[in-house]
Length: 613
Ligand code: GTP
Ligand code: MG
Picture (cartoon, rainbow, N blue to C red):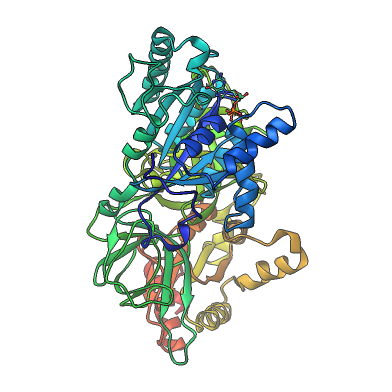
């Protein structure tokens, strides 16, 4: 006991210099004694400031109020607020082994929100159960949530043993019942400990009141938990938070920044960014105000410069090229814990936050809904209520990179946002083949109900001399709009029915008019795809350009334009990996030459009649 030092300031600031650090969370049903166990632990480990305990006890006596160890936490909160931490739900203590941050979780919703937003991170948990009251709703719910958040180190603390005469039978019964419940979740608790928070039994020393118990004390258990140190040896994963440009004169380097979730990386390592599939290699590792280190590992916030200049966006997952790649998909099966005020329903847009990615997402199907406290199936439910747990199929509006929960839980966790509110959290169980998609379903539906005029597309094509076609330029080059306009002019002069649309006319313009509804990339692609469908249906050679077009954008536009065809021309460097354009032109090609090549290709494909050349 005497090895412990008084309560310390939070240590997040200088990770490496301090002794090992661990985040713990204490959960359990209301009044089962979470705060008491923590308070007593602080007192018995000598982690309290000098005279604190006496002061609170005296205060209680003055007010004729029975002393509670839980009061210590409130008192410490005020104290710490004057110091460094502003986080009132946490307290700190040291053992000879490491520095602890304890998160007292009064309500599971708050706790969950903190956990999923990263405000609180726990590597291990103490789950408190009142020996007298036994297993309650939240004892189970919290067990489930811990498993879902990937906190596998759980010690079950059976508290208030003094109220049941330190009965081994009561303890054994609770253990048997709760073990059964956890087994169904696939969670194996590391231990069950009989304690009395109030009396201090089995917290820091084994108690004579429970001679039948020879396992670890709570303190011994806490020190026996393992930190995430092992993460450094795992597959490398870093969500890209931001791309910074160096501002120094003449310097055009970029820094790719983020926090490493798992693994270790060194200069020279080849990396791949997903979902874009872009590759490069690490040139330097950059840290703030210090020499470039020669490696960086899990838990560190770092920046990298790359050996080649590639165009990537925040939200991508940086991985090592030689290692198992993450999944890249738009559909996945997930377990979700819902805490939103309105239920989770199909057909409503939500936002998915996964790593550094933010992407629109929809519920495709509910596979199974469970009552989280009973884990019993609720049959035929078509929505997920607050506090329900559900296995669902979700679809994002563009591909996201992730791992499965059983592989790397850190890159398998996500949050669902409903109207600016964190409404759910979940873990990805499996990816689903994208053989179907909500978009394809909608396009199919649209075509089924499309009311046609009396003029058929065939008749229109005969009259115009060519079928309607969506001609799309993809590429960053500044020449692209000029090229597109010149193509329109050339086709027009050749008596084709054509129309050039600058995307700015339908994107930016609308943004200005309706400031509340700034178009997302997804909305823009949708609008363009719908326009393509209309213009090609009208029999036109519809020409437009899309800057920064990615594979998925083009796949989507192609789908939205169906049943009509699209012809994609990439100019210069493109972001395309999977999607093969119908024609690729170098950026520096003379415009007339480029137009010649385009027309030649359109002819070759039979899209334009030969006589037009
Ligand atoms: P919430 O934060 O409200 O969810 O409660 P909690 O889980 O933090 O419980 P807390 O520590 O506040 O304890 C609730 C009540 O149980 C208090 O009156 C404590 O004195 C009492 N209590 C806690 N531990 C023990 C114990 O080991 N034995 C006995 N007899 N009472 C206890
Ligand atoms: Mg409490």
